[in-house]
Amino acid sequence: MKRKKSPPRLRFESPNGRVSSPEVDKLVEEIIGRVADKWTMLLLEALAQHGTVRFSRLATLVGGISQKMLTQTLRQMEADGFVTRTVYAVVPPRVEYAITPLGGSLSEAFCGVWLWAEANYAEIEHQRAAYLKRMADSNQVRSDAPIANASVIAKSERIPRP
Image 1 (cartoon, one colour):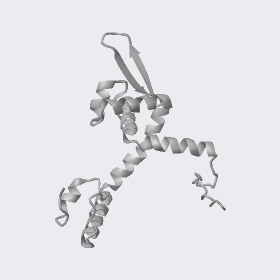
Image 2 (cartoon, rainbow, N blue to C red; image 1 turned 180 degrees about the vertical axis):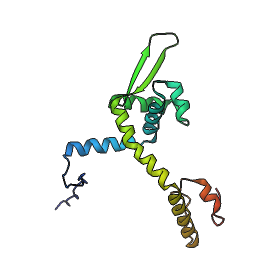
Image 3 (cartoon, rainbow, N blue to C red; image 1 turned 45 degrees about the horizontal axis):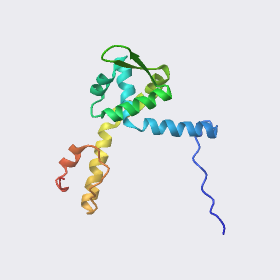
Image 4 (spheres, rainbow, N blue to C red; image 1 turned 90 degrees about the vertical axis):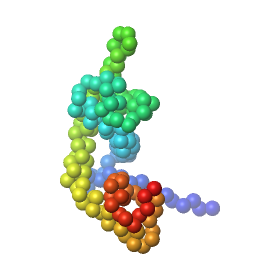
């Protein structure tokens, strides 16, 4: 029995046509997975803005993150070299986190996404509202529609609120 060939994996290609190595592609996939996690980017941003910060202060700055998720994310960020963790031998123990130059460079790179979102916010909201209208007009409204802004949903009178 012949086995189907799987399609070739996506490879990064620079604007000048240079193709990256499989090792770099693997690293990029791992980093995308990490930064696609909203907590990593929010923690990097909090540390970039506030400098050295204690664990509980990070939780307050980011908001909405559980202690378990904060701990897991900070451990992975420390393992990746994005943050340093300093433990002080005092009672009660004091732990502080600081962004590293590597974490800072990732934060700077991701800053472009914030700038893009800021510049395109109105257009995205417009597109989401148009999508909801098209779905409502065609009776294809789904409860899991990929709309992040509840205010857009509330503005549409045809879509029942949950």
